[in-house]
Image 1: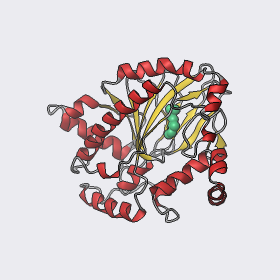
Image 2: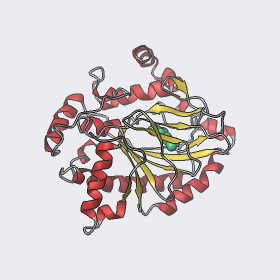
Image 3: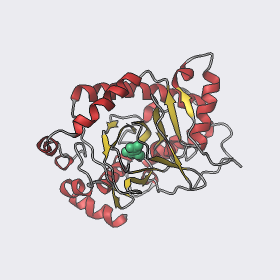
Image 4: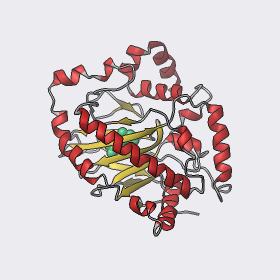
Length: 318
Ligand SMILES: O=C(O)CCC(=O)C(=O)O
Ligand SMILES: [Fe+2]
């Protein structure tokens, strides 16, 4: 029996690329994917960009209300834009965080570009460590990556910055957090484990897309953020998305194929999911539909405005 993790493994991105160190680093990565679902990625080469971005965040959030209003997510049928404090719901409770997007366009574009490059190299290592051909995960990608700037203001002790959830929209999330703390990850014994700040690293976690693609062999892990009590916390998640037109049948077929190729996993028990994966539900025709449902439930005001019929339908199914 494996014991539940007490801390998150640190994986050295450079070591994954270097022939001398690769095989050991791949073993560590495999363990992280199978047993934790979360890891710190160190030595990405993006340390300066991450710092520059975090330095810019307070000013971005201090933009005048009219600017935030102009880019409010309520105006976007694509669920892109600024979300005010308290307008997002996770696990049926209101989250205490706000986020603008597409501000400071150059920085944002650069960040997205760098993360796209990094995440694709990382995906190759993921395939490799599962003994799959390097390009196995490429066909699942689409133009659905998203970047978010998030601010958690200080609140009463124990407040919900963001409630317990699994990341739904893609393969992996790459998050840079500041030094305030509050991110917690649920281990397999049901304990919340702190994921403290480690300078220069990205926190990488499996999303429900990869969980589905690997037939549950690489499960997405629940996490949450406890609001800070004294200092504002900022974070920057980059969500590596799955293409929206992937159907459930295609997914099942490729998952079966992939799982057959992952050695030594037949006996692995798939942990029961504490948060259901919509992507595996027959209710939705394709990944995009399940994704839209998730967006509508997370941002009910935006959902109600642009998709009133779907809003009615999906809120009855919650
Ligand atoms: O801000 C964080 O540290 C986590 C954010 C998160 O889990 C999310 O946006 O999905
Ligand atoms: Fe998340």
